[in-house]
Amino acid sequence: MRAAPRAPVRAFIGIGANLDDPVAQVTTALDELAHLPATRFVAASPLYRTPPMGPPGQPAYVNAVAEVVTTLAPHALLDELQRLEQAHRRVRAERWGPRTLDLDLLLYGDLTLVDERLSIPHPGIACRAFVLLPLAALAPEIHVPGHGCVRELAAAVDSAGISRL
Image 1 (spheres, rainbow, N blue to C red):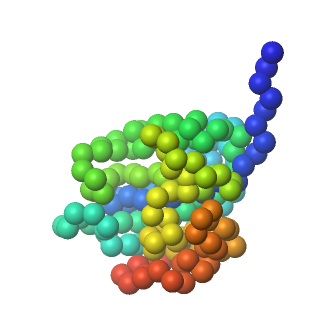
Image 2 (cartoon, rainbow, N blue to C red):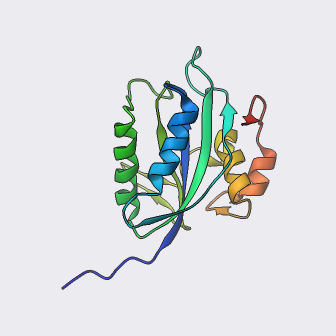
Image 3 (cartoon, helix red, strand yellow):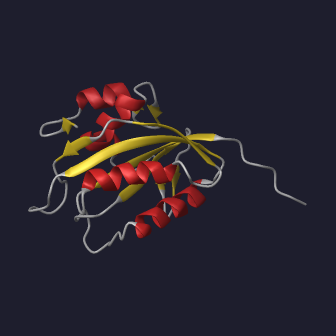
């Protein structure tokens, strides 16, 4: 007996890079998201140059957010995002350290999930300008479960040092 197909879900993916031509890393990742299995690319935010959140001495980041509609389960989508990171030679050596590509599953419909591999909404989503500004440019009306409307969250966050490319 076959499992029933999953209903399509609107998901948002945070994208960031600060190594090996970050603009090219982000734009290439956006193209690659359009080819994920069981997933349709909908739109991308503008690119933003943002100060690094982690250890000092890092180059600035380039960040964006992509909207997709997918029938992949949350963990299957995470697996696909991590596969893309590995294809971009992502090294996980230091928490919040420099990286060629970082793909974060920010929102998956209105799902709230916390387990050993995945937290949805993404932790920190409600206070990180490098996530909220691109997300607000793309979908200001979206509600972040447990936090509120993206437009209001983005208006309340400190966006010093962030510029749209």
